[in-house]
Length: 267
Ligand SMILES: NC(=O)c1ccc[n+]([C@@H]2O[C@H](COP(=O)([O-])OP(=O)(O)OC[C@H]3O[C@@H](n4cnc5c(N)ncnc54)[C@H](OP(=O)(O)O)[C@@H]3O)[C@@H](O)[C@H]2O)c1
Image 1 (cartoon, rainbow, N blue to C red):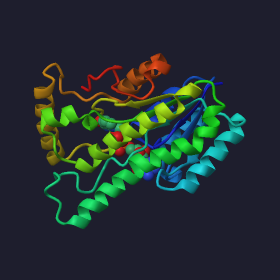
Image 2: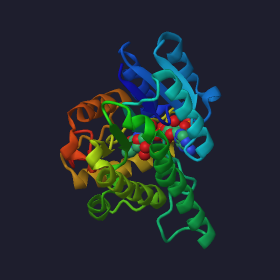
Image 3: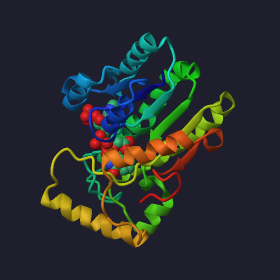
Image 4: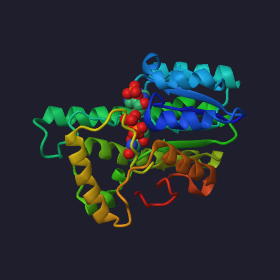
């Protein structure tokens, strides 16, 4: 019975990972959400998926992660096969600024720290807390969602300079994953920093301003990769592509930072 933990499972890509994993009744799936009581779509899924367990887990709250690991261990007998670190601080308050535009030093510093707390420290805590279970699992795969925006070449080529706290924290996350990879290589672990592509995970229709911002982003990204059609992936498609990558990677790939296509093609 392969077991999966997915963080940030209340909505978006995390919810879709949970939906796809729970479709196979031989899997046991743990959906971690920081506010499970508000995760309506997750509860709807739970009504039909008897192999799905909804558990509280906040990346900014170590105690909640420890309690989640204890709950998972109770069901699985102390093991875990796959950890999907999907949850992230994505919607940052001052996402429209570039690094020179923050109104004051404190705002810049607070934003950088908030993104680091969740996207770097929160992921490290999650991995460390679930490590005893993962050591007893058979897959030993730890997949952490990153982004092409954490690739220095992408930033330099596209000139995409807004939301710096997000891409800076994800670049640090890639290095965190490299550290786990070398530290646990001899134990047969496979760590990946995996970008899902550009995915429409929005819950609400975009505002006219969002549409304009998106058009500008598409233009920049198409200059970087003229082959890209400018259409975001659905969560279904992105997760299905990522699942193929997750199934294929082996010990030689540990520590890699790759995309939904299993390479450095981000779009
Ligand atoms: N969508 C894209 O185009 C794209 C592109 C590149 C990379 N990614 C990466 O893919 C992953 C999922 O993206 P998404 O688009 O689905 O994001 P999203 O729609 O913004 O959802 C983020 C998820 O993370 C959860 N979360 C936020 N802070 C958390 C915390 N402190 N503890 C636990 N969970 C927390 C949210 O929970 P609440 O519901 O409680 O807020 C939500 O479930 C992220 O790691 C993101 O960086 C996405």
